[in-house]
Length: 392
Image 1 (cartoon, rainbow, N blue to C red):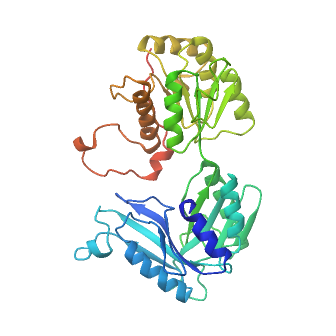
Image 2: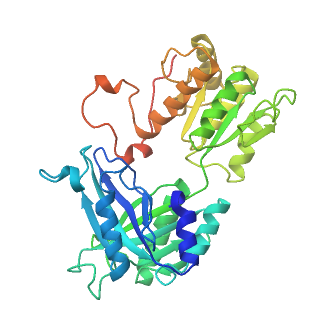
């Protein structure tokens, strides 16, 4: 919804109804992820995309119908034998799209949600997209279309049951903390083993953080590509002559501090989470060993350290002496990056970014032309911790 928020809010504030199609589930090589949104405005304008062009026409028709009827619907699109080019996905993927009418009555909290998203405050929108006990979405007893908005400290709306609201709120806050979007299943009264209700959770968390330690030329390139990937980038170095805004214009902030002290303070203040990545580019024991002691004991998404094989061996030995466990050391990506043959700072930054992406989604780093099977992996790979052997 971020991509279409301005248009959606403009129509909502004017009191005009909007048809909104949201990708709520994907299988195989789906072109857009869960959470992708397409709008059909009151003047017939289409904004956004749910499939990169494959099924937009069909979603447009469904949204137009929903605007008129007010009845939400869940549509599945995939490859069909004779109709793939008309309303199917030629890539072979399958997507579920929930189409609903959005206006001041159906979504009275949209203004608050938009304010939270724009200010970088965490918020999640939970929508009931399927009710297995109802014959169709229009059934009087159906929960489809029910909505709950969840902030870290409050909620608004309801999914139709106080117990369901309470169970969903607990689970959704966990998803929000991790920045995860996806579906949850419950019974009608919040039973976690129930399957009757399907809830779609759209999480709008602040951007994940990338902390780059070491104010060197490689750090400038890593900060640039980190910003491009959507991270909030911090460059940290204890040397004020190097850690300057002029040298790192693409970073969101440049901090003069001992990196290990800064990381520890940020963790204690709750300003990092399991999406945070840390890139240690100092390759100087007096900086990187104390920093890695802190980083490897935190639940971070990625910890990488630059250096030669010899530097790596010395670093691992020092970390072992400092009490870092073998399990913690397996989380260390060192030497940092994938084997791309990189030479320049910019090429090295691409190598580091490629490793971060690969670890996030469970990729192998191999050439797609030399592989077979699915290109896109299941979102569950995002939550799997990748391990690597530690050099003795």
